Image (tube, rainbow, N blue to C red):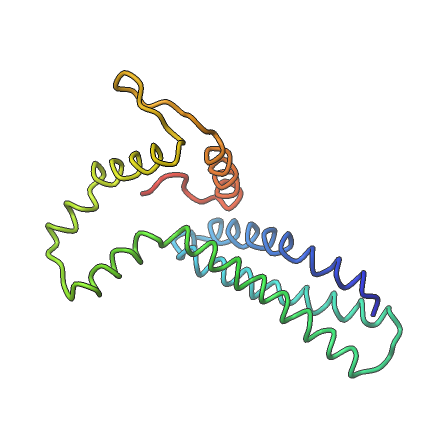
Length: 178
């Protein structure tokens, strides 16, 4: 198999994964499965991507003309391992953005053994969470306080946020917590 062709195919895998994720997300919503957990949708998309990955690996290997069955099987195995490695990273990156607060609360409960609901409600109230985030943004130089108002100081994170919002729009996901 031509190594350049294989590498190009593997480099296209993350883009293909995103396209399949967008399609699966939209189909799920259109068919009444919009309430599926986002992790289920992304996992399904990654798994469905194995079908075109195997087909493309088979076609590339067949057209390369080696004819050696062992080479073809090894190439397909390599493509599957690499594609699913990308899928593993994509799933966990996506999952981290969806569940970070959930995991943080669960880790606090695990460490303490138990926590009264009033303490959790107080600690994770909107006012408390916004206050902590504003302090962090000021410390990172992203915000400044001027005359009792907050103003943007660095727009880098804002640009990253716009990219994520655009991707959430492609996936037809809510842009704000429900």
